[in-house]
Length: 340
Image (cartoon, rainbow, N blue to C red; front, side, top):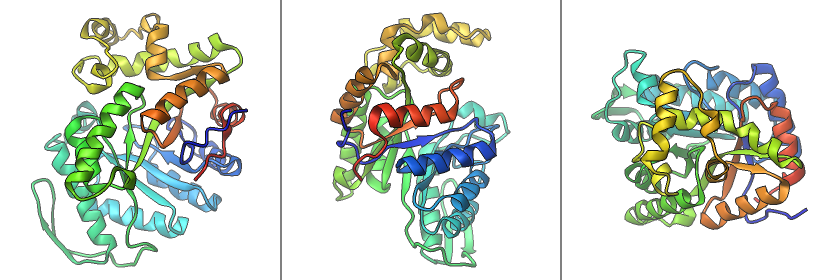
């Protein structure tokens, strides 16, 4: 089996998995050599910090990523409190992911989706200041604090922050202020090259190097000796993701690999009517936005992503595929113990 040693590590993450099963999956991932276990948080799934706390108590070495929190539904001071407790439970293994989230998800709760770039930047600044033990008075455009201070000292004064961002402005912000970036679950090699260039610009603007950042990407990975079965497994989720994103054909996720508005329009139209357009997911779409097929085919696609700049692939949940199957098949076919 060809070893994919060009990657820093292999991570995994699951969202719609029952809590106790998710903890077992984290234990399994650690046993097999995965480097980070990511726990997303979206409306109206299970709360990420509760799950992460349970994972922390049942694992010993694997990093625990919260990926990602939006900056609106928790004040950054509350995020710092939660993260500090997770740091204690995990003995310094937490990674904080922050992303703007989807406007529709935020606004359905009656929360204004205002200044997402500013909100993310201020969230990172406030969390870091509180972790350093500062008494913080902050008068920002998104948040305010008046002489607040954590009542305890977390194990580390600096917790790595990864931004889950897509567009050029926010990618450059990640290069400027974050320890890493988590690229979208529809990242193609062309988009990764686009993202890395903007990360580089942001890093250089703040006197840093691109090499100082960890470049991760959520990836839909379905590997099977039966090529057609592997590829069919990712089509429903791709139809959902593209249906959600189709109203934004200007997104670099689409423009970088050359997906035209004409191709996207039918996805958006049918999805808006409550129809999941699985039949529109062609082999070209699968190969652009997923890693799906035989082991050799998947290794080739992963090598393309490595060459484009992904350091830490994250095998994300493929709805309908059991979590344990995902973890074990990727470890077996693609090599679970990457070079750290």
